[in-house]
Image (cartoon, rainbow, N blue to C red; front, side, top):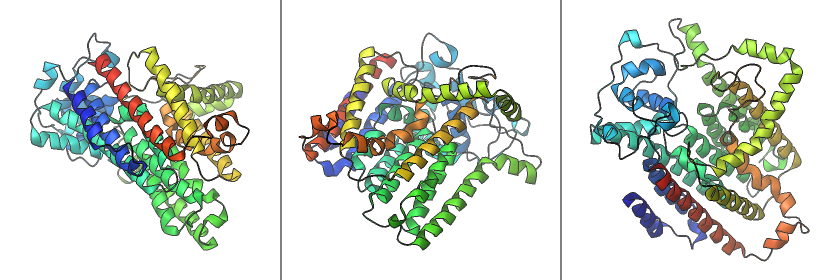
Length: 482
């Protein structure tokens, strides 16, 4: 309770909600302060696949550039990981109790160095750089204290602060889409998921940077240059470390109007740059194959669950076209539903009050209407079509990838249950752009309803409403989790 009071005092002390020019500062403080509070509130291993992410972060914290072994064997390599894995967990072990910051067994665990004995190792590809922030937190925790709890919470906090930094950078970078990025960044599930061990914080942050840069291109107030495309491509390349299919967003600058570019030569240079960066992303995805080819002793150790044969799945889907089409259609229909569910229930594995879920949905519908009315530029039809095409390809890729995970799908199932709304976070960021031409029409009812709103007052109202709903979600979770 004391942490919550301290968090609220810090928000009131350092935020400037009456100054719309402080939006990047307000975004950083909101996410950093409330995210750190969430990191302490959320029980151990409560985040989505958090134990798996913790294992990877521990390897990176131990200074391992390449993946040393699989998660199961890492229990014998790392006493810290084994100690945390044994603790009670409602989502994993159906325990009656969760492990939180009041659990004495967890608080008394002491750090014991990992033992990377050869017989336990199965070295494979590079460890994911997405785990560097949380690994730095673990290292800092070990320097401060020999208690595992200290390094665990600092790993979470460093991960969250990295997301807060990316949000700040995205809002700062944007010239005409700041408010829209701020609202998208503060959707409650982004704060909760980023407050644990995960690489989704990198995904959310990079998507916001993508939005900032692509909307700068679309606004047309400055010509797109070669250096702009290089920065954009580099940002998109980072997506291969967290949600690989979304790297296709790198193609979007190719479908800007030609007059957005400084010259035709700049467009040709953009094509070459984007293709080069896509190739680098491809190399990362096939790194295990490359290691096996050039270093025959290397094996893929980062999967503890054997996936369904890719060739067998593909043959089955091809030989059963009606079944495959029905499966795809159900997968696409799930996207909208799961996006709303993610907003409604942002806290992982949390039995939420119906009132809070209803409030989240209503508040964010209002927020997205308001920020859509604030859009000051239009998007050409070719760009919109390509964005929707990329969305379709990414969704197909996600559906196909999930069908290879026997935990959630077996060939013959009528539904792919693992398709989650948070995977399509990038589409939420584009919603104001896509809806603006419709909502801003003079005869549209919503436009008439808000037509008399002062622009500056609207922006300040949006910031304050985001703060209120963020605090509300943390307050409810404070009592629900602890």
